[in-house]
Image 1 (cartoon, one colour):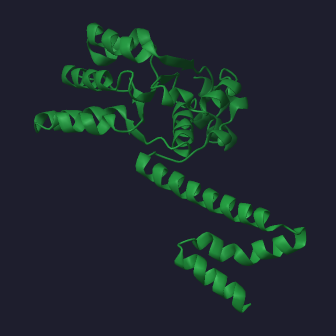
Image 2: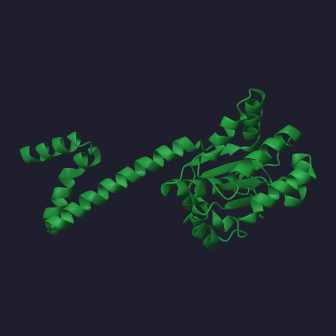
Image 3: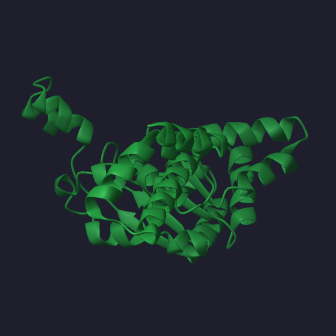
Amino acid sequence: MTQITDLSDGLKQLKLQRLSDQIDGYLQDAAKQQWGYDEFLRQLIDAELASKQDKRTEMGTRMARFPFVKTLESFEFAYQPSIDAKRIKELSCCRWVANGENILLLGPPGVGKTHLAVGLGIEAIRRGYRTLFIGAQALIASLARAHNENRLEDKLKQYCQPKLLIIDEIGYIPIDRLGANLFFQLISRRYEKGAMIMTSNQPYSNWGEIFGDQVIASAILDRVLHHAISISIKGESYRLKEKLKAGLLSKQAARE
């Protein structure tokens, strides 16, 4: 017992708290399964690497400022048959992030666009990519405020730092001309350099109305879609589904 205590104390001094807490269990497993020195060391190293990875993911997730934490594993693909689950799994490898490409998730409210965006964002964080999530209106407001305070350059640099920028809910509220110009500047800065995920409830044909200017909208889409994967979701709202299950809404009301 004294030896185990000494080992635990030593691991704590090396700042290997997880191993310190679990060393007794590893020693028992080593004895039962007759691990050699090399296997015992491999088990300890794997456990510590997994612990560090979990901590990096946890910190990256906090820094990303997601509105909620939902993984791809918890997404109900069966409820949204228009989404190719195999394709989403391929995207979870995040090669598109490394290549500075974009993903656009289009569909009506409640079909899981933001859930998919967050899930893919978490996968990017797991692979070491710095990620930031922000709503479209909050982004425009932030850029406009920086513009008025003569610090737009610094703000644009800030939004260009994350390898993956997730912009949620484009199209829910119209954007004025200043906002459209500022948004275009950001897109231009990130073009072919930083990956983006965008979610929108509007088809591309309506983006001229969203940005109040067809020319600016075309310029934005030209850059966004040059290296992009578009995913259109056609299905029922998850929120309506939950209300139906809870008996808070009739099927007739949901159809209306």
